[in-house]
Amino acid sequence: LGMEDGRIADSAITASSSFSPACNASRSRLHAKKELQGSQEVCGGWVAANNSLDGPHWLKVDHGRLTSVTEIAIQGRDDSTNPQWTMTFTVSHSRDGHQWTDHVQQQSNSLCQVLTGNNDTMTVVSHNILPVLVTRYVRVTIKTFHGWPVLRVELYGCACGEYFKCPRPLGMENGKIADSAITASSSFPSAGYYLPFNARLNRTSYAWLANSNYNGDQWLQIDLSSVTIVTSVSTQGRGNNNDQWVKNYTLSYSYSEEHWTTYAINGIHKGPLDTRLIFDGNSDTATIVTHNLLPAIEARFVRFQPKAFNGRIAMRTELYG
Image 1 (cartoon, helix red, strand yellow):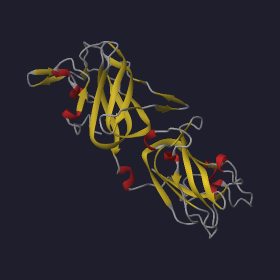
Image 2: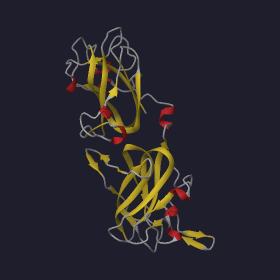
Image 3: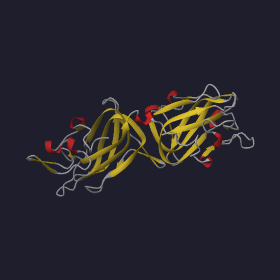
Image 4: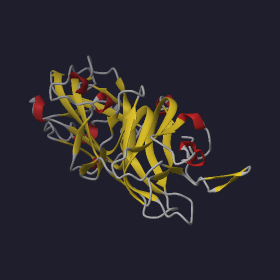
């Protein structure tokens, strides 16, 4: 996103403190070198003013606009006489620079707030950001360090909205997602016409129909085979002039099918009745209803959970990313 190549201006990079002007926040760019600039030797990284264990020691990056952040990479200090690096760190984010949220990382089947950093000065350590952040400001706070609090960093992603300019179907309609990767809580028994793999957008004559109309425990699940950024979802009703469709639903996602997260705007989930969890579905049998996911999610498994329906729980769907 512009740390290493300089697209992010020096003035957009700030820190809790700096050891000297030669070691200030603007030196925190990934692969920055200890070098001479004119007559001054500058540091190979940002170096905090002190090595207090209590800190706080943080580095803040302002992207200038809302940005989708999908990955972070860090290094220690480029200085053979000063073996210094960050061992663990946390990430927080803000849209306005005032109200901050601590990022909780989804890792396999667990949630983790403190991320593993470096164990030497030069190796780049990267973490995918799960779920993806949509933010303007990112703050990296050093929790433990070797020698001194220091950082070189890069952030990866794209400007907010770029994901949605050319949405790429992930394979429901075109069959790229295998039949075996589409499962459900139940299916209406009728010669296989309403099995989960029929939940493909624009499929004629068929759709997924649940065997039960009890809203609370029915779901349709899609396995994308690998961790994928999902930016939009689309749904249709049963089609073929059958007045059956899902009126609203929730969306859950998982990295490993063991720990599930219910999608909520900005990651805020205040309880099971929080209306921000509910997506508007369909109001007829054929019209496609699409929702952009802001923030986008990064997951292998995506699950639709119908909450209200017309006639019978029936869905056709596509994912984009």
